[in-house]
Image (cartoon, rainbow over all chains, first blue to last red; front, top):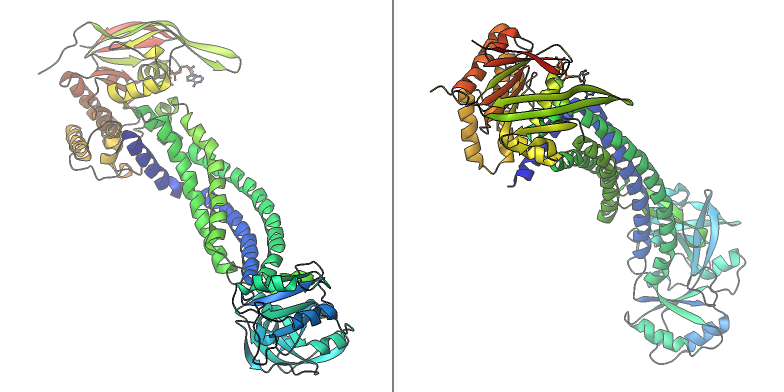
Length: 394
Length: 235
Ligand SMILES: Nc1ncnc2c1ncn2[C@@H]1O[C@H](COP(=O)(O)OP(=O)(O)OP(=O)(O)O)[C@@H](O)[C@H]1O
Ligand SMILES: [Mg+2]
């Protein structure tokens, strides 16, 4: 072990032992770093949770066909002519067929409606629709019946809004609907939707004849390419086919970025304040240790270990703040239910996710805050007038 | 065996000038101070408050540097060394005894004594052995594990002396080493310094207000208004 390391270690030990004398101000630095970490972790975990829901939604074995040159359901339209063309496509088009040779398909439309003062997505679908959702299980009740004003509701939604309990009647648009079933989809974005019969929805919202999207089951994930080629044969309308996960992942990007764009500047602003607090804490630590530092320097201890030991004290306090901040964030935020507006301005429920990535980002910000605030005091420690050591009472 | 100083100058100050800036004014403390101290001497420096005793000692310690003139110790020109060179020189050539002991409260007596050894390439086992030896020398054998706060002032100062001599430096600088002690403890400490000078040949420069303390030295220098005014040889 080199002399430099030994000097650093003994100075560091003296610093840490002296922390008890500086308890209050050291705690305040720790807490302000923890606050910065907590705020950033809050926003980042929100973005991460939102992304997790949307990227976890959909199956690669399901294709969504959209019309009109968009890759979102909102704004997409498939004309009846194009629809007839798709259903009439023969041969291997990458999509699965039933025993009779018909495509397994669900025509769908999403309307935005309101209940309990919340914008909600009501999805009308063919009877094959629920079967075209992988990972979805009916947990209670039954599927909606054709022609009936019945709805099946995701569990997230049913838990968040009591009006959607099984058996209840809910007014959507101008008409009353009965909740006949609940489904779970592993917390994915499906769970924020309301499902009903296609024709009933179209009639209730005056959207007769409209189809926004067509869901098809693929024979395998690679079937999407074959499907795209087959769709090119239909000239009535430009058609796009997306694997279902891509559809939802595409929605997540913008909202998650927005959350981050709001969270980072706020956290950085607070970090500036916390760094100023750290500077204050460390300055008072140096002042408190003046005699100690000057004595060691008078004995012959160098400037480099003096700098490093003070800086390391700042790092230790910042890291304690980071541990507190990430720990509390994890306890408080992780799994916390939240909701935001997703595509088509409808509500999407999700859970905040304090992922390792979130903790790393927030933790690094906390550490950098402490290191920035501690640098100047560490420099000041190396410049203390040594004459103080001979004069002052230890 | 009792050593006697050989009279060749070992510490030499020539025309040393030193002042302190207060605002825009420079208040001079020394304007041309000359001093020679031979190796093995034990010099007490006395004088009224503000006469520059501590300033002189700080310059000898390399903690402060002269504004002008030359300051040489054992062939090393302290006045022309940079800060880090002086720091290294200090670590190898001198020990400092402080008025208020300046022990680190969170370290045991032994750990305090060990501090200067940390600057040298000495193995941990050897360091401990040397600490044991000097603690014994200052009459604190077996007290190594005690914390300074639990010791009397006299004991703490003996720990301070042990720390100053643990690297076996040729020069000891003491700024009012007995200033904070009762008569009995002060006499113990002074006897200890006399022993270090007479038996181990340490050169000692000691600043003191205590005429009694000065009698332990080989000679006493009186500083007044930045000049030495009279020299009195000890009996
Ligand atoms: N760092 C400093 N800044 C400004 N003036 C100083 C400084 N150190 C010492 N002085 C001044 O230099 C003069 C000599 O001070 P010094 O401490 O050497 O005196 P001293 O003889 O040790 O006094 P005392 O017996 O009180 O310890 C005094 O006038 C003092 O005010
Ligand atoms: Mg003084």
